[in-house]
Image (cartoon, rainbow, N blue to C red; front, top):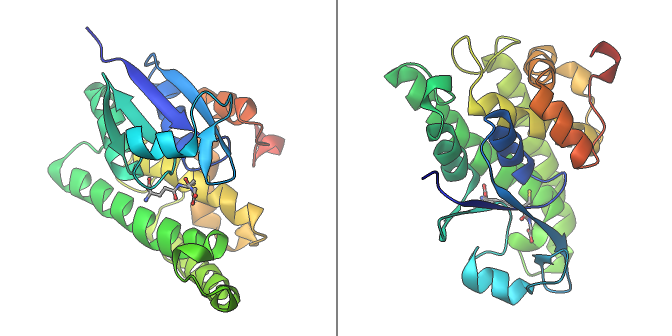
Amino acid sequence: MPPKLTLYRRNGSCSMVSHILLTELAIPFTSIQMAPGPHGYEAADKSFTHAEYVRDMHPSGYVPALSVDGEVITENPAILRYIANLAPDRKLLGATAMQNAKVDEWLNWLSGSLHGNGFGAYWRPARFSADEGAHISIQAKGFQNVLSCFDRIDQRVDGEHAVGEELTVVDVYLHTFYRWGHMIGVDMGQYPRYGGVARKVEKLESVKRIMAEEGEKLLFSDET
Ligand SMILES: N[C@@H](CCC(=O)N[C@@H](CS)C(=O)NCC(=O)O)C(=O)O
């Protein structure tokens, strides 16, 4: 029996990566759409509150969360790894032990340094200080962190893939941050090799479909 999967997600957010991967791998799942409420994310259809979500699903109240036969996984790297392991033939965690380690290295760094210290500080300065007077400088530092991570990504990728010569979960994760870069006004043309990876990811039918479903414009629509 395949596991019963439920993905808690929000359009346009980092949960899009899991949404894309489940779709790419044709894995059946139930999608629960979340929306911002007065205290944090809650069910978009109001079927549960933020407090219930924190109690039952995600201790921080964030997306994504993936329920697997009733047991909950949180944190993007863990969820992406779990999904990739449902289709081992696709080798989305790399094809060798070294590639597998490199995939983990990327996932941890992207989650902590780029997502957490970059976009997290820029969009959610209250995570870093309760002092509202400090928020502008935290956001400025978050923005700088994003730029320095983008520089490092551009140096490390080959214009097609982050690890090895085939698609891995890292490429799909990178695509979301590339999209967010545009969103916060970064000139992404400065990162042509990174752009090559995002462009390649966006050629996948699953990516086009989920971007449309989540109301996101394609980044490379002129070429597809
Ligand atoms: N470390 C977490 C971060 C998840 C995260 O920050 N998710 C954002 C959406 S992209 C969120 O839920 N933000 C809601 C909030 O900050 O209240 C992970 O990798 O899963």
